[in-house]
Amino acid sequence: MELLVVMDPLDTLEQRGDTSIALLSAALERSHSSFWCTPGDLWLADGIVGAEVTAVAGSPDGLVVSSGTPMARPLAEFDVVLVRSDPPVDSAYLAMTLLLEHARGQTLVVNDPRGLREANEKLYACRFPDVMPAHLVSADRSRLVAFAARFDGAVLKPLDGHGGHGVVRLEPDDPSAAMIVDHITDGGRRPVMAQEFLPGVIDGDRRILLLDGEPLGAVLRRPAPGEFRANLVLGGTAEVVGLDDADHRIIEAMAPRLRADGLAFVGIDVIDGRLSEVNVTSPTGLRQLTELSGTRPDLVVIDWLEGKSASR
Ligand SMILES: Nc1ncnc2c1ncn2[C@@H]1O[C@H](COP(=O)(O)OP(=O)(O)O)[C@@H](O)[C@H]1O
Ligand SMILES: [Mg+2]
Image 1 (cartoon, rainbow, N blue to C red):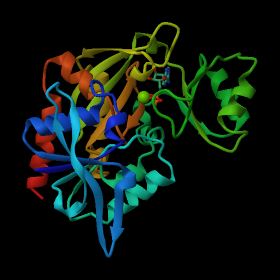
Image 2 (image 1 turned 30 degrees about the vertical axis):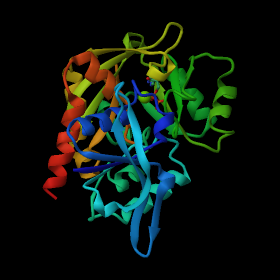
Image 3 (image 1 turned 180 degrees about the horizontal axis):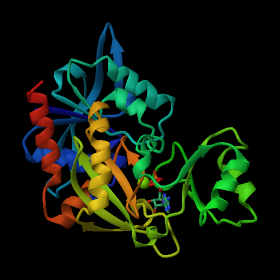
Image 4 (image 1 turned 60 degrees about the vertical axis):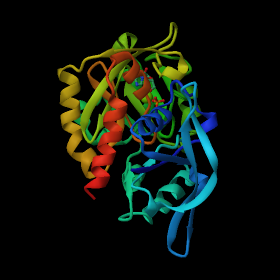
C-alpha cells in the first residue's frame, strides 16, 4: 500500500516516543511505500486535492528519515491518508479538514475529516455522560466556582488544549478561585471544561488506544511528584496495564458512535474508571504500548489500514 501521513514536520518530532513515527516505522517494516507531509503542504487545484509529499526510509540506526525531495502528488494516488497533525484545532486545522473533504471517496482518510471537526477532544466525551465524571462546560464565573465548591475541588481545562497545557486544579475553598476562572475563561468569553477532581489520578491516568472501537491496549501514566497531570510530556511515567471492567464499559458505550463518526484511531483517557478525554487528532502512547507490552499494536494498526483500504 501507499501511505501518506499528514503530520507535524518529521524532524521536529521525538523519534523514540512519537506515535506518528512509530506508525511510519511499522509501515516501512511491512514494506509499504510511505510518505509524510504537513497540513501546510496540502493544495487543491482544478478539482484535484494533493500535497507536496516526501518519502520516508529507515536509517541504519533505526530512525525514520526523509528520503529524496518533496514531490507533488494527488491524494487519490494513496491508499490511505492518515491524519496525525497535532492540535491546536484552529482555523488552519479546520482548513486542513475541509481540504481533505475533497479526497472523500478517492482514498481512505483516517480519522475521517468530518469526525475530526465534530469531535472536540474535551467536548466529545460529553456524548457519553454515563461514563464521564461530573462535569460542567461554561464560561460563567459563578457557575464554575459553585461547581468546584460542590465537589472536592475541580479540574478546569481549556477546550482546545493538549499535553496538559492550561489544565488547572481548583480547590473547593480557593481564595483565588474567581481570578483563576476569569483567567482561563478569558473574562467569561471562552467556555471551559470543569470536571470533579478525581483523587485516583494519583494512581494514574490510563491511556487506552482504540482501533475501530476495539482496544489495542492500555498504558497507565502516573504523574511526576508534585504534579496531578499525568501527561508523558510533563514527565509522567508509563507502564502497561490490563483493561478492567470499567474500561470495557466505557469502550462499549463509545464504540458505535466512534465508528459512525469515522474515528478509527483514538486514545481515551480514563481516571478512576471514568472517561476524562477523547483524543482524536494525534493520540499518543503507541510507542510506549509497543515497547512495554512486547506486543505489536503498531503493526495491528498498519495491517488494519491495509485491509480497510483493500476492501474499499
Ligand atoms: N477530572 C480529573 N481529575 C483529576 N485529574 C485530572 C482530571 N482530568 C484531567 N486530569 C489530569 O490532567 C491531565 C490532563 O488532562 P486531559 O483532560 O487529559 O487533557 P490534555 O488534553 O491536556 O491531556 C490528565 O492526564 C490527568 O492527569
Ligand atoms: Mg490527556
